[in-house]
Length: 58
Image 1 (cartoon, helix red, strand yellow):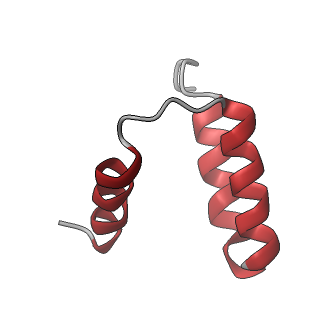
Image 2 (cartoon, rainbow, N blue to C red):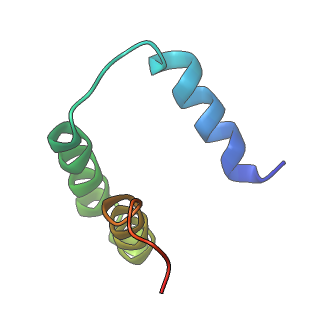
Image 3 (cartoon, helix red, strand yellow):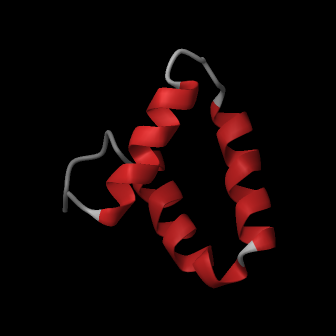
């Protein structure tokens, strides 16, 4: 188990029954990077990966 799995498991446990929009998620990611700019690159990579999830690998 990776350390990040605990955070993902907590997210599912606390909010797993909720439905959210991608706009809401984008707002939360932006808020997070505003508060924690040291994670900007990781959040950018995650957002790009999610945006392109349905594209075939090059």
